[in-house]
Image 1 (tube, helix red, strand yellow):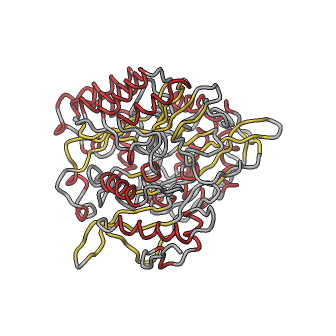
Image 2: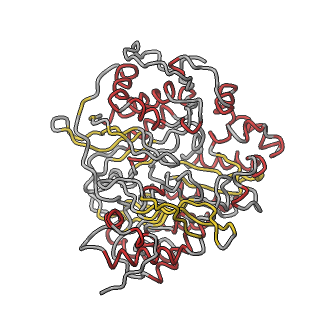
Image 3: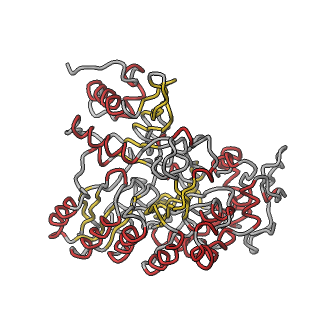
Length: 571
């Protein structure tokens, strides 16, 4: 295995002890693949599959696809086979992946914090209409995700994306996954620094570069210069967070090693100051550490968070500086954490006197035709463009003051409310069993039905309560950091296995960052979810003190109130 690090880097000065058991770390000499995934990547760089899709598979059809490409390298092109119809959640862990494969694909298109013009939004919409049975979802990684994609149609889809300045390259796989950028970059009144140029530089320099196409596993990036930390920086592999140095001015701190799934861990803060024009260099250094020192033996330990946990943040920073940057970073206290998160929903004045408008599709579900309508609306009202958010929302940027109210009315007419209920505003859901081969339960429709019911039961809820619905333990919808996190699983009810959820309560990011409280042996059936959340929220509204948040209340509440076994009544 060749050394893929930059040839200009200085000699290593840090001493990394050789572990007793091989973890597959390239820099320690363990270059032989220790599992089938690593062998597949060694056999052929996944980036090479693009040409096979264009010139072979799209012309010969699904049956012609090499299994190693189909269930491995296709992911680097943003393509996953979707779940075949007819398999319930009990089959998810019992059947091999190929048995769950349908002959259609999910396609993930990255936006990377870009401002999408009306032409780009229209291209995204027409792809959904023409090739994806009118599907389209806004994901919590600022992607547009389609279903029912045929391999024969991929070349034309890519042509349309290229023409719109968009891409599905490395949207999945053991690669630099799509970046999270602040939806209000460059326009928010209270922004510390606009990081857009840094995200563009990282994309231009490193996406599609073979030196960064083979990580131990996925590598998630976030960057924001907004004080609300609106990209969930605590849960990404590497995040750049706006900060102010007392002498040097605005720049970015670097946080590393965040991630959720079955072993959740919040990112460690380096406590540094990085100028805008050096962010891409630091990104490449952190990414290189992960590539060269990351654990490749077990997929379950192949995320950066495990390396950071074992080394500690001081050792990690030392390796970044000495082995990859060749210089020390400027130390600076990490920026203060905000309370809660900022989703940018509603109407807000920009620093240039124009406005941005955040709208809330329910649980991120839109459609190709809705995106076409949105593109028409953006063009008609002279809006500068749209950004996707890490909370499955859409923000329209650059709205003239005298057109705001007419625009808000028009958006509401097409199903994108800028003044949604707290439930619609604060509910997220992953793809779920409808299309995902890892899922155990339905999520999207269950979340939409839940929102509708809770709007009836609590029509005037006066405080945000986030509800994140996930179809399996992988936490794509960030269940552990929601007020109410729901992890899909099969549960026993009256002697039968039915769809249900393990409940996490009181999770948060920002100042109160923590993972939700789990109650021992507490499960809720999907059918009983409306009543359970009604009981818990009802108890909170009765028992809260002054402006106490849901997460703060959960931390002190009696367990029977959290289980919904006891119902408080207003005095």
